[in-house]
Length: 173
Image (spheres, one colour):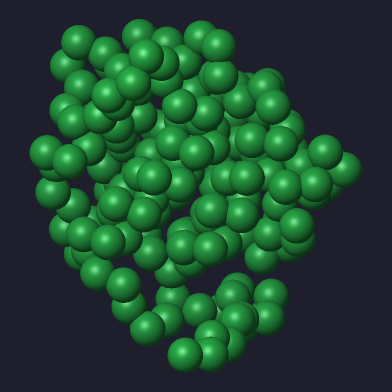
């Protein structure tokens, strides 16, 4: 089956999944670019860049974004708390993606069609602070069976987004 991909103009007007990625102090510009590619690939509503997270336009972001910074809507917030407050005011369920005491395994949670979701991804070294985790509605983590206790944050983002899209159903958009 041959796939026809959207132009940037078609992407901008296409209906989106009501999912926003919140990047909490992501230090690698390559990871930021990868998140843009993921948001474009899955027709997500947008990305909120917070704190030290790099912002387009930037050559290092473009290395992995490959133009997705032109299609995906994004906003910058000086703090992640500002972004979370706005998301909650607008009816989003805010979910931290982090290993913590109260986290639920990704394969044990059910997502629902039309549920507005914001996914918070943390710094590659320090993760998401307890303060931010406490301000989220829940915390989920990806089950891992190997010797490492974490995944690259951008890889993690792709896995979580795919699981949500798979659960709520892939739509012709």
